[in-house]
Each structure stands twice: as C-alpha cells, then as structure tokens.
View 1 (spheres, rainbow, N blue to C red):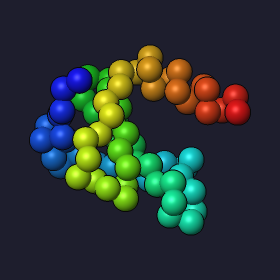
View 2 (view 1 turned 180 degrees about the vertical axis):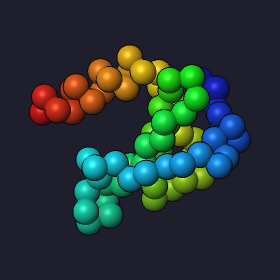
View 3 (view 1 turned 135 degrees about the horizontal axis):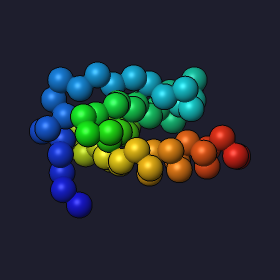
Length: 67
C-alpha cells in the first residue's frame, strides 16, 4: 500500500453521514481526482487515509445501505 497522505493536502473533507453523533465513530470522506475517494479517521488525522476507486466506494456504500 502506498501512503498518499502528502498528496491529499488541501483536500476538502466532509464528515460522513454514517458517523456517530457522540464523536466515537467519526469518519471523513473526500472526492479525489481520478474518480477516487478518500476515507479517514477524523479523530486521528495524522494516520494515513484509505483511498479507493469509484467501484470500491460504490460497493462499500451499497453494503452499508443493505445493513
């Protein structure tokens, strides 16, 4: 896996609607160039973000909606 944290500087992140309201499960997402998406833990932004392509992101969202 390649750490692309330095390439994400200036990225517009938003808190996921799936994040818990109590602050315990805080996930941020960003739409990235090249039809990719970034996912990171908003409580520890120093850790690397997970970067996935459009198909992987769609599969994740479909799985979340099915639960």
